[in-house]
Length: 393
Image (cartoon, rainbow, N blue to C red; front, side):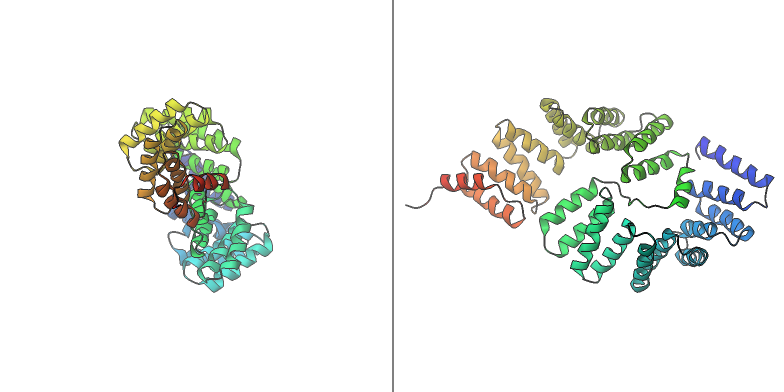
């Protein structure tokens, strides 16, 4: 393991050796193990803490969190012991609900999610869980209400947007599903949770991956300054790492700091020139800075590595249309639609460029597709297109 991780584990083991009758010492060792992916060792340490202090709900709860992926049944049993000792700690009910849901026991999972809401009425995880269960039961309106509330409570949580995408798809609203799915891809894959005990665990991490997870959690919670500081620490541990630089750039884009985002993406590309996503995002950041020629160069280079990349093609098409190079714009929009024929905005934008080239019949076809997919052009364009189209008589 990384040097700083080895040293921290050694220090915590020395503290336990010096005071082996202390539940707190064993618990601290358990947190250190768990923070660095050593779940079996964490379970053993928490087990010692629980044996020494069986009245403290923290130890069975933390055992449950460590065991959730290793032995879900044992995790559920430990969560039950924790809930018996402290039924007012909402994360205990949330963990039990997620384990029950994973085991296919939707009825009991729903009970536990509702118990969590009774204790923590503003829990986005509980609302998401209830919405997810209602969606599986086909109760679309009730699921929509719950998922929208989860989105309001956690607007930067990717899993909530992903669940909304599934809901909209079930309702036949293709364009709304597409928007939600796109948002899910561009947001952290985490739902912020008020869980002080588990936060203590993650704060014990001193590994590069631990800092990465802490940065993602801070970003999901809207703590951008904390996330930025953590990425800085990460770069101190692994200077020049292209994935860290790429994620750091994404953080700056989400906070609309496009100049700093461009610097991070350039650093990622210096380390890995074939990093297509970094090159596409660099092009988009440069475009936001008004540096169109540089943006176009990077987007073209991205297509050298992946000619079908939809984001590069879409952005390039918009740039060519802005410059009046409509044939090139049409070519790139058509590449986007070859990749995804259900892309309403691409149909709409292609219709506008086709009309500018006098290809009215083709433009009208794409207007129809855009309208069916929920992305109609504006009324002014439709009136101008209608006036321009040849009609008998």
